[in-house]
Image (cartoon, rainbow, N blue to C red; front, side):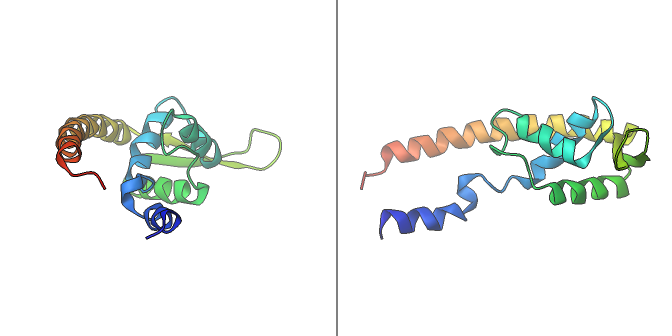
Length: 132
């Protein structure tokens, strides 16, 4: 198989790490813990997190996650019409959202521990594997 064909196959594979959509939720909650923001600004701020998906997420996906969080009572939204220009739907984290963020912190710590263990295991497997 050619190198370009292999690259094309792996571009869609979860092994390249581009499908970490579930991590948007704790990122949104963490950013909202600093104060109310609208979806476009949240997406921009997520894109500024060092090494996080390497780019800002799709804004429509951010709004979908915000609506999910709102339906679960993690955030509330309201229209801000105080600024000149278009009204903006601002999202604010709730007490339940802050509790969820604390839970996410522990979950991410556990993921990190498990990923470190998996990295050691896969690294050892690579070292033992014959090179082709």
